[in-house]
Image 1 (cartoon, helix red, strand yellow):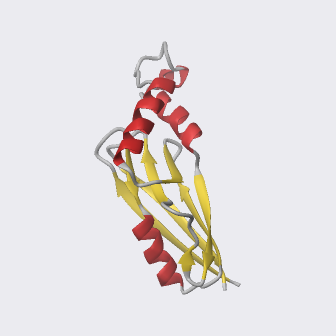
Image 2: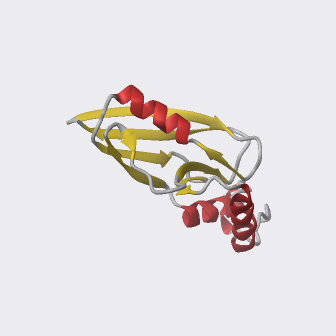
Length: 140
């Protein structure tokens, strides 16, 4: 069994946004030369997410509105106790918890084995600085 590791670096200028990283993950898979196995994609920051869904702008806008209703941005320490530490991103931690930390995709015949419409997205909830995503592929 082989193992391959690559990190992607993203710098999302908006506080909250979604980036389709499927082409980057596909490039990492090709570079790995692994034909059968598993591909883990992990947001390496506690205010970011990786998830799988459709690449449809209306859906992404719905996610943003829904997440903002669940955990609205508010920099005050009265709403989020986390902000008492000097941070202003208490909401971002909650949004990440809802959207998830990572995904695992089967690799079959050298390709990501997706269902119809599936794509991999990086979700940013506290943007404006560089963050990393781990791509770890194991198999043969």
